[in-house]
Image (cartoon, rainbow, N blue to C red):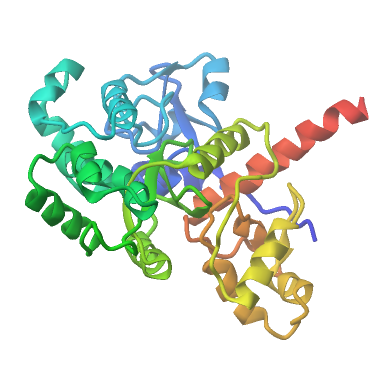
Length: 359
């Protein structure tokens, strides 16, 4: 099955522009012929007249048509992207995760404490100081589990007081540092053309890849924590770094498959469905009935659809390639605009990859 899915028409895009619909971020860009400027769908500027609008799939297409980027909504940056100063701050935390950061340190990055507080609360659900503390404690967990003495872990984490270290550790992990079962899942946020994406993993595998604004993400992380008996903390292991690099290549149109180790943790039926999703070729689609048949359960169409929706790896396990039997796009946890963007992106990738061999 390779049913083309109809993209959004211009009237739908203009309606999204009028309501500044965040679900269309990264999906289209609007150029205003009367000003020569192009914007993202959520630009805070007043909406232009419909007759002055031209719609583009990418910012590059708008630039090539002679339009310049809006200085208010900055369409050349990923949606909801961190500022350069915030990125430098996060890189500094990753470069020295054991450091005890203070608000006074922010001045060296040209940042105000209130600005950083708003950003971290919005993006991570915690303050910068809480983020730094959780990151610091996360670095000592593997050492303790590997036999490192608690006093050494305490000093490495920058705690002079043993009781202060134990209290902070217990608040984060729900256990004292001496209990070997305490463990951590590294959670990292990175920017993409479709908005921030969250990756959760450890040194063994990636456990989750999801849009940061997906409804129910907190519950998904809570289920993951229960399954692994671990607490999510800021951090990024080698598998997470690998999947982020592969996703960057995918968005750039240079990668069709992913090789980072994954641990979905599903039931046997769910895992069979997710394996079937990974076998759908780039640029093609399948129906829920096709997936049910592919796993040897042709009557279990509804169960296959539920397993498809429970997929913990957005994009990486391509549940967006499943559509309704009649050709309608169907649902998608990341939102229908993103699903259609991904299908069009992959259709173009497939055409580009086939072009050299056809020449």
